[in-house]
Length: 219
Image 1 (cartoon, rainbow, N blue to C red):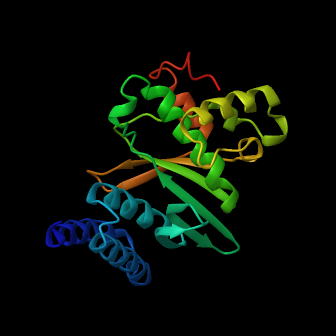
Image 2: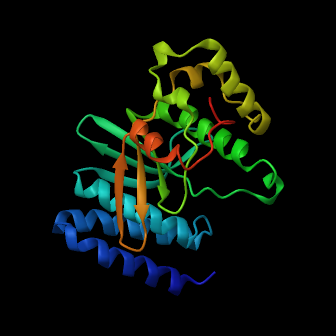
C-alpha cells in the first residue's frame, strides 16, 4: 500500500476536474476524494477504480447532484456512486470488464451475467440506475433491459435468470428483480481527458452492437 502515491494521484485528477466546478461544487468533490483516501487506508479501494469514481462524481456534481462513493444500500450491496438531486436519486456502478482467470473460457457469458445482476440488484434502490465504463471497453448490454418491464416476456426473463444462476447463487438474482430492473444511462469515461459522457442504453447498443458479436448474447 502506497498512501502517498494514492493521494497524489487523486489530488492530481481532482485538480484537473476542478476547472469546470464552482467553489461549492469543488468542496463537494473534495469530500469525495477524502472519502476515497480514507477507504484506501482501509485497503477497500484501488487507484484505477477510484479515478473512475472521481470522474463520474465530478460529472454528477457539475449537474447539481450531491454525491457519495462506496455507499451501503442494502445488507449485502455497496454501490460505487450514489447521488441525489431534488427528490430523485441515482446509482452508478462502474464496470471495467475485468474477468477473473476462472472465467477465461466464458468471458462473454460471465460479463453479461455480471451486468444483468448489477442492473437487477441495484436499480430497485434508486429512481435512476446507470452503468459506467472506460471508453476502452464494450459492455454487452442485454436487450431485455431496453424493453419496459411491462413488455418483457416471461420466457426471456427466465432465460436471463438461468444465466445469472450459473454465476450468482448466494443470493440468487430473482425473477422479479430481473422483470422490474431498469437502466437509465451508460457513462463512457475518458480517463486521459477526465470526462464522462452519458448515453441512453439504446444509443449505446446501437453504437456497439456492430463491434461486439451479439449472436450469443441476445437476451
